[in-house]
Length: 577
Image (tube, rainbow, N blue to C red; front, side, top):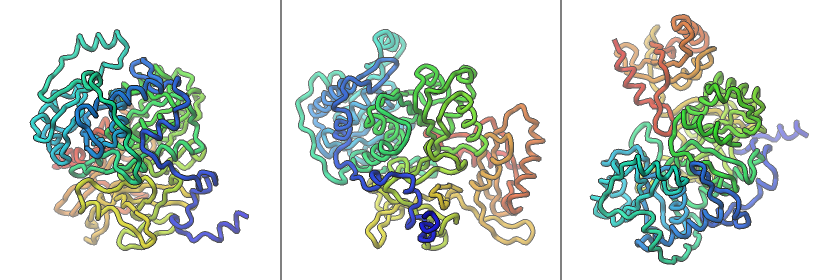
């Protein structure tokens, strides 16, 4: 039977969809939710009001209280003039009040514009003026940076969310004693807004209606507004809820990525709450906080950046723990090297955990994930798992428009219910990234290089935009140089913990590669350098080999945990002789 099935394959992933063998017929043929984010949350939890929804500094908030506060918040927004279709700009992190606000705005049919809290005041003003927000939401701790937005002509109200409002009493009092509160014009406190709320009506669902605007990572330029609908984000919640994964109602879920990032919003808030899990809220996003919360709460599931999660195995206290409670270790952002991935998996297994290093791939433009590697089909180190049910992938030849077969590298194009509507007020970039094929299917160009194997597993090999031309030392011939692939080869060397490669201009070679490598300081760096050079020379042609190898303590990251290539390029140029 298997042999007959294989003979029918065309050899092209987008047609054969080999990943579908991992899904049930029920999931493949199921209808997707057609409702608002608020309605999807309600339908999945209306019969479980006593279950715990949020855990914030040890204060537990039930689903009943969650819905009660969402409705009060919606009435409050309505009282200050927020109406269906309004764009409300948000500067906050994952507090209960942030979650109440997101769902309250959705209930009203308004749009949450999730801005990065790392922006400057000038960037924040520009973002607000672009979408003409009349109402702004700002976490009180962020007011010193963003109080300048009160000067925007469109702004009528600045709703200040108190970071301590939902803390237990003692912690709330201590926070008040330590914190220095900044005030700004046009502000209204969250409490005051709630107190003067006016009963509002729930907006009706419309197919494709915008729910949220998130922003692309911006590692190569100015971030773009990614317009996501209710359908986009509900799909992510639906597809993971209907996976044969190890999650269930009542489990504890910790996501160490903020809600202003698509991954943090979809996988850190919308999915776990839609499944009725207890969401442990994180307001600081660093290694130390992740380790502290892991030890304290013993979460069943974690979603976080590949840059932060390995810190779990470095904790001496966690090294002594029984980890049988730990079921999912989801990683996004910067991928782990194959060596690091294996170390993490072995570490967890040795302590009784069923969790694997579940590496996924996604984009803001696909509402977060488009592929995932769950425990039940783990086993291909270096892959990003299989394509999500009802989504698809094409591997397109880089110099043309022809689809590549299994195993061949090209630019990755994705389609599916999670693909964004457009870039906000940016028709040029939208046209460049989105296109509709002859069958009426919308595809998004990822800008990433990769391939799909016959088992349906996705592998990422580099960035289209990170392709450089270099001159051969022997004969002057021009070749293409792929820094991400060079980094992948270096990461194969034993004891290499992390690696990133950048390319800089060079008068003799046109472009040269500079490698930044992280190794344990216990190793002799000269010996490590020789080991890397030997391995690279065996695997790569001479024109691809790095001209310099720089050992660093860590690879610099952007605020969302991706490799900061711009910082590395500055470092590389600064070390030129």
